[in-house]
Length: 310
Image (cartoon, rainbow, N blue to C red; front, top):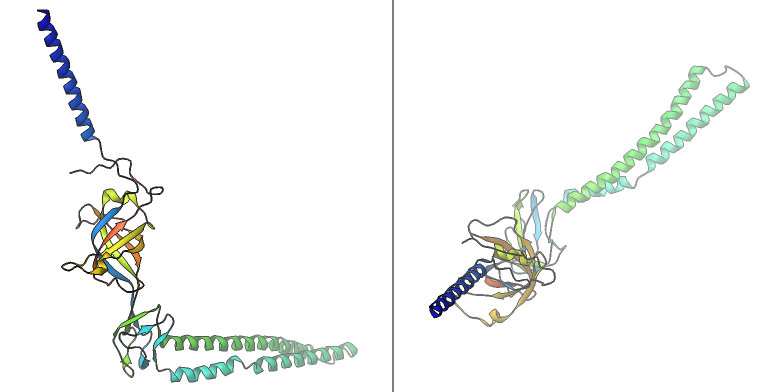
């Protein structure tokens, strides 16, 4: 009887230990998995795009005097790549330049003012010596003439300043006839040639710079806590269908943009893109690539507990 009770007690203890073990396992399975700080995030199917790409147009209508570069040629930042004919504006500028340096009217007005005040003082002095020799009305006229001479100087100075402003306006109009490259690059399209008539806003040249490119992809929501703008990245080409030696090379850059909303088309993903240096023009726009985001363990923002609903 005693042996039977002992056996039953042992079986009961064994069952209790087994249940506790199963409960502990279940709790371990249900506990959310924390994001790992500093772990690299790999994004496949990233697309390479150009950052510096611009179509240059005309700021005013006219006839193209020249369009210097051809397709495939390099241009420098600040280079005048095309210009409209501006002979009439240049002639107007010469006239305005002469006026802006001519202060004869100011000097004449100053002399006239001095004469007016001298005449007024002389007549006032006569009346002091012989009262009422000059009538009060004549004195008022002389005072008005003196005051008028002061205003004539102000008017001459104003016209002199206006002529300088007119010269600046013509210079601005001449600048509008020029088409200037905003950065170093290569001409990829030429829409008009020398001698053609263009309207305001017509396209003239397309310039592209390949010194830096944008690598764009989509990252899972739970991974967005691991990095921030400025986090370094490593990029490798992934050309479908073939295997080239260039795909072994690694290009370096940093995260520039993290979207502020979830892309509904890509499910639980957020768009990010990185700026990558491309000095040898090996990364072509349209290529696919794999991007590895390399968070810093010391500064990465990681969620304490990340749970993803299935």
